[in-house]
Image 1 (spheres, rainbow, N blue to C red):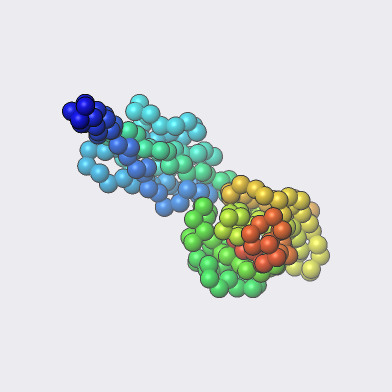
Image 2: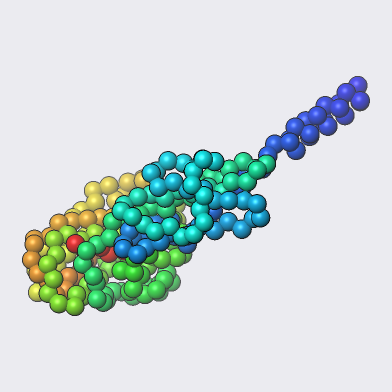
Length: 254
């Protein structure tokens, strides 16, 4: 009986050892990028004998997909996926880089009030540098523990503008909630647009989104965007009644 148990153990252990290991996914600097002219996407996986294969049509890479050899130039709007492959190992999970349509109007400078204190990234440039934040809120995001954030965008000259988008993060488990509303004003303080997010206080999956609104077509020297957070974390959340976090990234203008 003891011999049978021992044999069963070695058979089970042998089967477990025989299972191939899965590779780690390729690394990339950011999983969200502005699809602006000249933008490239780079991947890295440093294991001798391994290779990275990628796709640009939204499908998962296979062993027949193109081999990554150098940074990929972005052509049009697309999602780029990459996996690590190596004989004797299971392919990795896919690393996806999402390309976002860039704004057509360049922002010359920008002021923010109140200034972020803890999550400061690259200061005001974070909002218009073409590097979009991903699900790691410690990088490429400005974090605010305020109920209202005001950003004033300045252009080099009076410029025709018809639309504006503000990127935000939602990770309610980390007390990060999306905006409750956004208002846009011209340089004279006239309200141009107001948009309310009706579901801001509801339970929602984590994610990265843009809130966009059309503007009356005109030429503007500057635009002021007021982003209003929820007054307090809603009652269904463990942090109910406390102030939440508001995380903002890229501001896009057309």
